[in-house]
Length: 416
Image 1 (tube, one colour):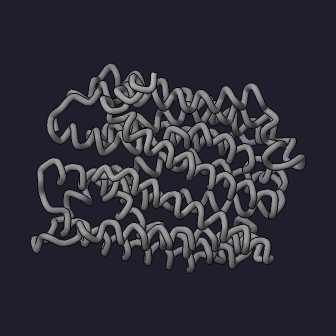
Image 2 (cartoon, one colour):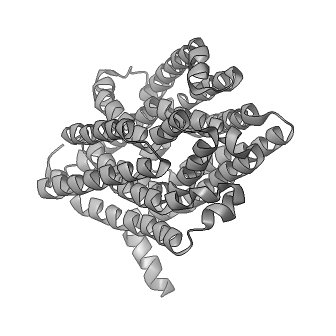
């Protein structure tokens, strides 16, 4: 049995690399969820509602940093496939991402008063969010370079460093009485440590070429990727912000707790598409067929997400067990929310696949469903459960349409 498993791992790059990333992702997600749960317990529903809303804005605002990660991975994979030097590209990407981060952070600081008033949150918490955003625009380059080079152990280690530091520092700062500001500050410090480690890891690949890299192709590729990442990020986070806006502080905190646990069925398969993207991009650059690889990734991702949904179906009281009895009213939200995230994880795999093979037509399809979901949430939000039901229906339609579009079209057979 053990020998058969080892042969299977050695013969399947998705399983081999995916296993490394899955273990690292499990460790990272455990640390992240310990962080969320601990903050929920220490802050209480009212303050946790504030924290959840700002954290959701952080996720949505970091869509540009996700774009940079994806674009960096794609270009590193193609440079690697062609045997070209990466030094000029990495140095240029670091300079540009840093300038962009400064611009975004400064914009948030300028608008901090308006944001604080709109969401009814303290001004200092919004300012701390601006610092977090600056760091999230610097990290994509090290992460993207390491992913493109298939150094998945290093990528996983950076994630663990960030999540572990965030948890430990967050507990200390909140315990010392810094509240939501302390919780957010711990995120900034965790990102800073990962950034330092990441730059050290990629520094050997930053030299070796005096030739300047033309970023025109990078920009033209990044624009549709930006649209895709925006549409990817908004459905996974906007609902928490809307819950904070439409509902009471306590209801928003309850919704945030269901969201934190429900998203496990979405984050579990993230190791699969993190591994899949550079493999698909490199294979497509060489003119190889990629459809079989996509199907394997969908199978593995569905198994991971389905296991989480099954757990919540069998043990729905996990919300109370994890967050405490004050969150009992969130019980009816958990199972439908986790199913929603299972469906969204399927669409995420397919989105990453089309970005890897540079089929931007799918981005238009994905964008249309995102706009539809946002519109429906703005129209139908009388109760937290109704919001979840709207998301479930929208993501069921998106995943079904995406599967039909992709498998009938056989886009993996298109040439580079």
